Length: 246
Image (tube, rainbow, N blue to C red):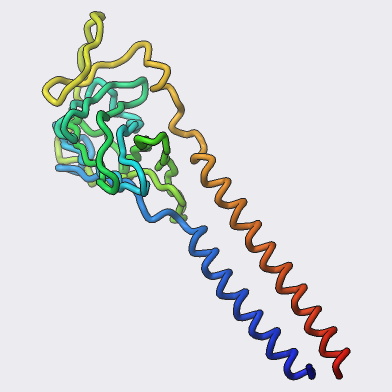
């Protein structure tokens, strides 16, 4: 093989490597699914506001069965009541927010629920860190809060607030809940505060994104390394073959 033929072969390999890199980069980008929040009245200090949440289904073989929402500073768990949710789902207060869940939804079905908040805090934006649990045990954490205009891979639902209405003032704290045993909370009753949250509800929402992300990154890096080694080896082999046949 002459030098010209060897050059053509190497160029073909270079094109193949570039295409593989594009595919790998696309696979390593932010996940397509995400969680969102909207409000019936997105103003600071607004009262009796309905917050509507949507968590996009991203598992190909299981449905969402539970959502854990961490409330931002200024919204207490006992100031939130479930308004709407999938049939049979119930809301339970936690130390820093609430969980809502029940029977797993169908595969590919987005989880939508809404809550009523007694009053929004005096802030410019509110982040609602959300952890999704699927029927097969898979977990998706939407808990990263963007800052400085930078994009993040697993963004938490963020609600931008307008300025408070003229004359709006913070409401007095709601009365402390009764010390009697806490029943399961439904859409018709407010969410009580839990003085001793269940063990399953104490997982920090700030925990790192599931290990799946780390393992996927490792696999991608390994694939790229193997492709580079194979291409380099092939180039050397073709070059030597060309010299031997010259």
